[in-house]
Length: 343
Image 1 (cartoon, rainbow, N blue to C red):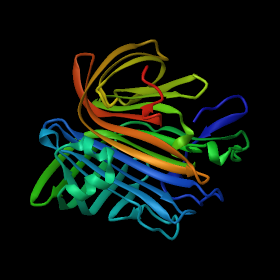
Image 2: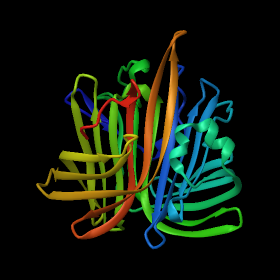
Image 3: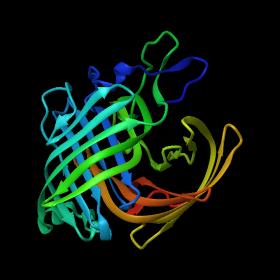
Image 4: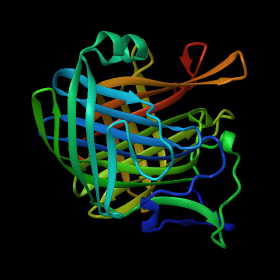
């Protein structure tokens, strides 16, 4: 998503639709939505990642419910091509590019009273009750688009190494989400705010050493996305934006500190943010509910790479306002520990 004197950033309304897959085996095209209802203090996120050259999609539904419960489903349904985001009962529809999209799901979820049990997925899926779930949400853009595809100045794709890539292109947008979700015989009306994103290009979850991703909304007029990405050589890349009254002010620097529990799951965080306009923000967050997820990939016959992603619904405070969003922490796990605990 970075550009320089030899490249430019490109984003067209057509990018909301599906792209022709590249030849790389690990080609991924994914879309993600989250939404948080401030009044009920509940929220959720939804992701479909098509991997057409591998013949399956990654499908995730995660709902943060009252009293710390989490309703969750993950599957790898088979897909024949990259013609749509529609797999495993989850479907994303573009009604109007950059303005209006729909999320719908019909299927099962497991209900976790102890979401941390997802650290062992086989046991969690076997030992927790299942309920029928139906989701119907409309997402409306409340901000400009942020991001796109970095291309050469003539518009041609840049060269990348598929095995070391997380995405060729990525964009984000703050949103308002309204609709309903039903779990068993309980229906929740939803009216809240959140963020959506889309990526395409080769992806391995092990291509990034660690990151901290904070998508946040305080209301229709104020939101943030804070991104801190670390590499094996100790380099740290900071970015993101602050939404104020319909415009994005890009983040220039971010100093961030996290608190951890005995499992190295984040419990709280603080951040000091400076934007390109010179504005400064003091941000604090308290994790309300967290579910740990993982991705594992074998290299050869013996080595297995282990990536952990902790997904925390988080209550934030900034400039005297309370908001909600995610603290999503990705780490490679080495010797049973996340590789980075300084952020």
